[in-house]
Image (cartoon, rainbow, N blue to C red):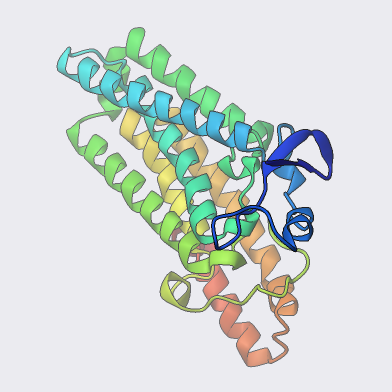
Length: 279
């Protein structure tokens, strides 16, 4: 027996089964009519299950293709392994952004949580620039690439990528429902000021992690120009964002004590480590 979804006559849902195994009996109709389905999970919605599954499939495909391609190209002695490695790293990053949100901040998990198309033109430009530098230096200027890329820089880049990603994912998990990809302007009932775990050392450990992750991706593939560009652009971006968030963060969580606000501000500034050099 099927019932029609209240919002769409073309969509049907199974009628709830009674504890005895029968779908008939008093109250069945009222229970069935009380079923509410979030309309945003349908195609075109912000939580579209079709879109979420398609994103996951595409990222999984690019990740596995990138990994196997990197292994093959490395053993073949071809410099272009840096391109497939970069694609694999980005694929894993974007998958983890959604997975971590869905696992520890379920109510806020949306298609946009993948951050594939919601980071703006500057984000896309940065990655396109990195890909261009990889291709140009690998195919046309291998000697120039060798001046900056060796087993030590590759090891350092890998360490920064793994470490940065780990810190960011842990920070998102520890913040749980209080984490937002976009800085909150109003406080929800379930939001709390997280001060434990990584947040006892840094006010914004997710920024801290991404800062080193992003720079690590460029050191790993031997991009000299983009390594410097990422460092400068991200430093100023996070520095401005972190400092501009200090007072609003205190107000958002009702921190009126001057002492607590100063403690918060010190943590906020220290969130940036290398950012903290000038803070």
